[in-house]
Length: 296
Ligand code: GDP
Ligand code: ZN
Image 1: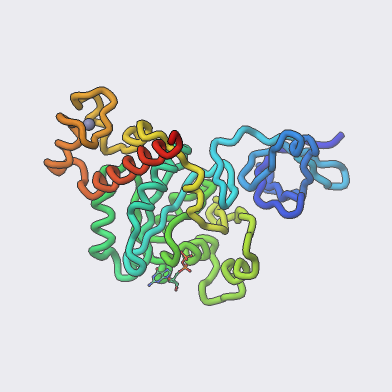
Image 2: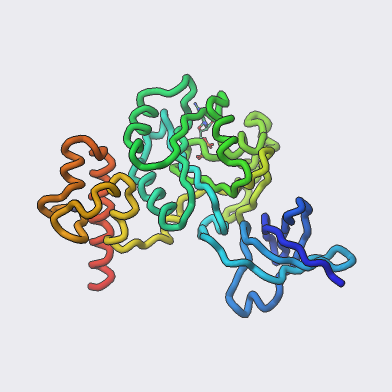
């Protein structure tokens, strides 16, 4: 009899999937033809049930329901998204950060805001970013992929998690991935980036970290293309606004131009960070605009 095992897909190339079983073994598997008929493509991160025959050939029998799914890179069941910004060049794009946070909240992914390039400890930029997100109920971590500052703390947070990275170009995502994987930046041969350069479209692969987690080797932020939030959903995704629920004059207040708005009062007296609120206004208005276009 073939044995049945539970595991996770960590890689898929040309119809062959590498499955890491709960027992820590790897099997190369083919997928059942049935999945294709159902329009279901197995992707890294998928929790699966496989059967292994006497010769060691594996078959994916079942794909368990996905908790969430990133599109580019295609990764399922992501536990943590590291949203990376830089304390030096390039200047942080906090609008992008806020949108990635919305994406995380919508998809039940735990975000961690990583401020990289804190080579001499935290600087003013890092302090300002941390301040702006102090009410956002997220972990904010200052690190330097170059010196290793703060990287142990990051390691500890990722034990046992499936992790993806996102953020602007050149903030140091690849450097952080290399560091988390224990690859030395100087050994260009080993670093995943040199390998990536040769391919234009590359499938993500989940790589086991020394601390027992899995990290997607392909960062990106095109995942934002897949979120389309209705404007009314957005205020509820800002933890800063939670404690003012029910205190605005209007039910369903969007905290934009409505009178007697508890959130706007909180911005005025400094209880809600004004920069983050200003970006919220922009994001909410964009969503309202986008809906108008959809129905035009
Ligand atoms: P990515 O585009 O986000 O993947 O960024 P890279 O990892 O390619 O890094 C972009 C540039 O920033 C490279 O020249 C890195 O050497 C540099 N870099 C990465 N991390 C750090 C850091 O912690 N401190 C400093 N000073 N530079 C860094
Ligand atoms: Zn309001």
